[in-house]
Length: 448
Image 1 (cartoon, rainbow, N blue to C red):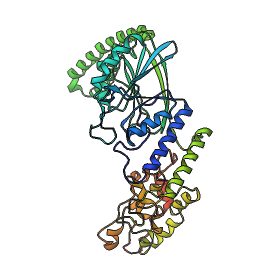
Image 2: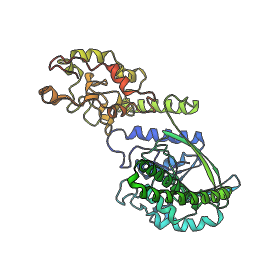
Image 3: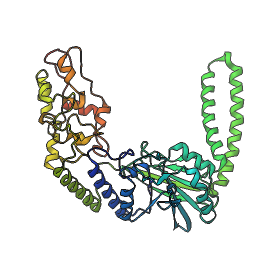
Image 4: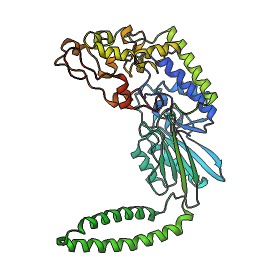
């Protein structure tokens, strides 16, 4: 299962260059999900970036169900997609529901007669239809955590919420209530997870007393810390004795709670949740790798035939190129020329990927991740990961070097490209030493 928002990187519509490549990649993702054997995917707002018609076309190529209970055709007052599916697993009857986060009615993502209704208008009737005949209810959604918690509190029969998260990839499950937990694995398959569930008839992940036990143990640690601080201060003996009495009473309460929890353990459900980051060091699945290579060829052919330029292909605003930097920083440029950054674009050319908009922003200077198409045909001294990739545009610094210094290199800058799925062994300090940029400045002196 997947919470959704897997097809595209934006939920604001595909504009400018790169729409064709984005659609090709979306189709490749669906082929991969077919291979993996998904059962159901919730429809998130990012799945609609190419419009409703494209998603309907994608649905026809999917061997799994796309779910949304609240994308409604106003002409028929019926859901455009399946609102839920049911499955039999491990002797249990499961229902899987999809909910889509709110989209403005005037959005170009939807047809004129289609709206995303608030979940409060749709979910109650679905829950009432499913709760009596199903043992386990799952919700797939891109709703935020606040809405997910509200759903869990209103409908205790919802047991598992799989959220399409934009952040917090691989974050451990969150207990929303005693009967509902929230899980999510981030976007675009960068983490994959397995959850093993031991589900009991009580339909509870934990007993009500478990929260009191956890809170009590935290309070015990706090009181013990206070006693330790007061032990060497005779003038605060009364305060020390008061805390000791509170701690003794708390210990008795915890003992009772632990006994209750031990006797209730057999009736409480449990899970084992494991996430694995899809880092570059992991071996590729042969069939999926074939899909990835096929995708690269299709993208290359598309963008080579008709480059999705937006009018800023030759130069980049504010960037002067490494040859201009060499005028004053000869030694630094010589050091840089021996690095892999200096041949970054060439590596794309050798692999036939110099038109791939997914790759270009990290292989040229001055590319805008929001407009990667502008990186195609970049001027020669910008077709590298040059000085300005790390230090920022150099035009103002070039005019007045003494007063307009370039930005220092930070780990955040590097991590924009050296992501775990591209470079899971990246070492910022070690990488900085390899670049050898901190050598005597040729003009102004000092370290750069």
